[in-house]
Figure 1 (tube, helix red, strand yellow):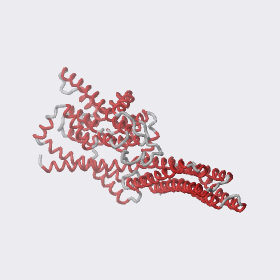
Figure 2: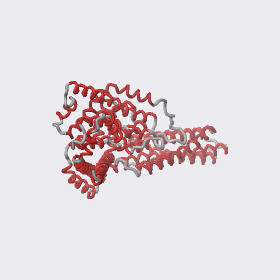
Figure 3: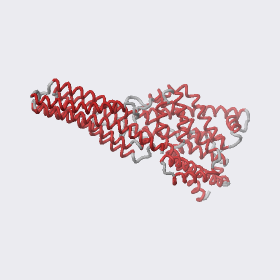
Figure 4: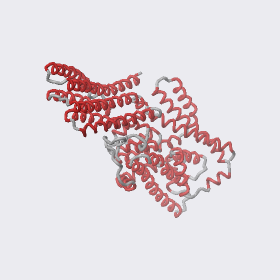
Length: 561
C-alpha cells in the first residue's frame, strides 16, 4: 500500500465526515426547532417516545446528536428520564438509516446531487431554501467521500499483505474493541459502520467478524452523550448512562446469540453459521446490504428485547449516579439555573433554556415589585433590604443572560430560534427595568420613613388597585412569552389602556387631595412617582407581549415570502 492510497482513503474519509456533519447541522438548523417541539409534545408515552426517537434520528442522521439533545432536554427539565429512555431506544434504530442509504449505490449520481445543492445555495435568496441546499450538498459530499474510499479500498484488495492483515482478524473481542475505539474517536457509529460496509464490499473483512465490529460501534456511539453529560446535572448523566447500558446489555445479549450460533455451525460442520447465512439470504448475497441489514436488525432486536426492561435500566442508571443536585430556586442569588458553565450546551435547546431563565428572572422582578410596594406601606426594614438584594440578583441575571444570548447568536442555532434572539434581548431588558422600578419603590419607602410622610388609606387602596392591574398584565405577558403564543394579547392591550386611564385618574385624585390639604407635599410626591412608575411597569409588560407578537409576525412573513 503506497502513500497515494493512504492519502486517497484519508481524503475520502474526510469528505464523508464533513458531508455527514454538514448534512446533520443543516437539518438541525432548518428544522431543529420543529423537531424539538415534536420531542417535547410526543414523548409523554414511552412507546410514542421510541417512535419519535426513530424518526428524529433518521431525520438528523445521527443518534449521537439526538442523544446529546435528549441529555440537554433532561438537563433543562424539559424531559424526565423515562421519556428520555424511550427516545434513546428509538434513536438506536433510527441511526441505522445511514448505513441503509450507504448500502445503496448513490455514488454514481453523487456529483450531480452535489452540483444541485451548490446551485441552490449560491442562487437562492431565502434562508430556509439555502438550508435545504446545504442538506443536499452534505448528502452529495458524503457519497463522493464514500466513492473515494471505495476506490482506495479496491487497491487494498489487490495488496496481498493488507488482505492477510485484514483476514487475520478473527478475535471477536478485538473486533468489538476496534469498532468501539473508532466510533468513540470519530463520534459516529454511522461512519464506522459505513467503513465496515465498504470493506465488506471489497471482501477485505469476514462477514462474521463485521457483526462484532458493529457491536463495538454501538457501544462507542455512547461516548458523545457521555461527554456531553459530564458538565450537566445528575439526571443528564443518568440519561447518558441509559444509552450506555442499553448498548452494553444489548451487546452482551447479541454476543450470547452469536456464540450459540457459532457452536451450532461447528457441531453441524457448517461452513457459515446460521445467522450469517440468514442475513445473506435476506440481503440477496450482497455484502453491503448484509452489513446494513445486520446493523438494523441488531438494533431492532435489542429494542424488542430490552423495551420491557426500560424501567430497570433507568433504575440502574440512577443507582450509578446517586444523590441529587443542589436545587437552585428561582430566588437563588448569583446563580443561573438553566444556563451557564455547568449546563449541557446544545444549539437546539439553547433558546429554550434562555426562556426558562428569563421566566425565572421575571418571577423575581414581579415578586420584588410586590415586596417593595408592601414595604412602602409597612416600612418593614427586612423587606426593604431584601428588595435591594434581589435587585442585585436581577441585574446579575440580566448581564449573564445577555452575555449568553450574544454567545449563542454566534452558533448554528435553528433558524426559527435564531429569529427569536432579538426579541429575547428586548424581553431581558424589559424585565430588568421592572426590577429597577421595584428598587425605586424601595427608595420611596426609605424616603417616606425618613420624612415621616403618611400615605392615606384612600391612597393606599388606589395603589393596591393599580398594582393588581399591573400584576395581572405582567402575568399575561410572561405567559405569552413562555408559551410563545398570543393567547392573552387582547387582555394585555385592554389592561394597558385601563392602567393608563388609572394612572391619569390617580394623578388627578392626588391633585385633589393636595388641594383639599388631605395629603402632605412629601407624601404626594411619593404617591405621584409610584403611580407613574407602576404605569411604566405596565408598559414594560406590554413590551414583552408585543415582542412575542412581532417576532411571530416576522417569522410568518418570512415563511410566506
